Length: 555
Image (cartoon, helix red, strand yellow):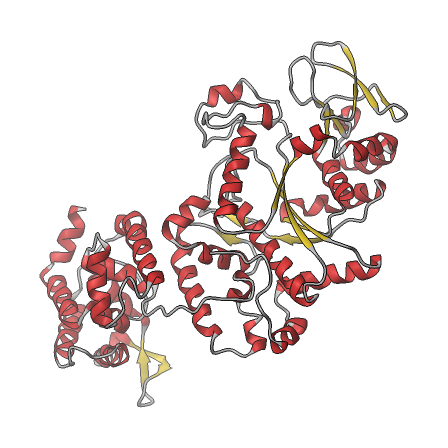
């Protein structure tokens, strides 16, 4: 996936449709346009994402950049790309390391450096100058690999280089006004020691959470007691101090004149604080977009330090980055489980949207997720086999290599080859890996009961009457015809072709449980067409003979 640095060539119809589209990136872009109109215009619009490198980058980090890129593209379309834009990915790498992440090596090394800025903590992986630098490099390598157009910014660099000196002096000058914002949000004990300034201890190098004995705005210094009890006076400039995280949000917005930043719902209660501090320091808060948090398989919030949920690398082991971008696009204000079982559905939804794009009018195209994922230029992809079908094919054929799967695919879709269909070839590899890691361990065949044995035998006989090249629709009709001969599988709430009862889902559940070893799957007729009629009849024979249950018992 490449995120285009400029909008694709746009037709008048697309631009007109974009102006009235209710897709959320356009809604956010319109807020930025209204902001510019209130301010009388601006030479450049700055989009920002924040990143806390206390642990390894996770999918939420990628999602923030991907979603912001979608809003940026929507803004450029609505403004005819006449206003320059920048995307700044800002790493808060000067934060003190408050706890040791559970998913990194050399835990003792990190414990010895608790409290120090992340860019002064040794790298437990031994590949970079610091833990912060290691995590920053991981983030940048990932974003670079997928073509995001962005600028990387390090808080350590900004503080040490003096780029924040002016705003830090302003914090000293307006110290009491900031305290008036912060103190009502704190408990009584915290109020007694709070300061927006966090000095870096000259003695230990740790970030200190200590009260200020004096803040002198005339010379830009603070005075406090160091960890050894000695009174120390430091300039607020030159990287000798940093700001507490809430004042840091507002101060950064004011210093850089940020126009748009999104953040997770866990920041929602603090947003008014960020905004007020930004205003105290003479800035105007950016437009915000608050997204819901991702949940793991247990419904708990994903945490970098815990390492729960999916990592970037894990998703990309089993599915494409485009599918990950689709997951980020869909319902960003709804809490969603981000775990392995969402991958197959998301993959197939992505290709369904790609296939639909070429058939849609302009109004539908600008609402199509792939238009936003690919910055207005979705690819043309013919995907004759779904990911769900491939997983079933791997399961039924016990395929361990792509060559085995391609033998079935080539028979099902003559002329389709790995060279002619690289996206499908990539999907084949994903399917094999996903099956081995997540489907096979849970695969349990159930022995058919007496009525199911009768129904399976009837299905076998019905399939024997079909031509070898019968298409999926013909096979599906035959499967339904068999089910209608058994009262158990009739559903009076559904209508059959003759107006009578339709077929219950119990029939297909029985087929999947006895023949595939799963509770459900895609249309069974499509699976048979791909796997083969003779091969499916052999599966039925094995199920009736108890061979599939026997294999399951040995695993």
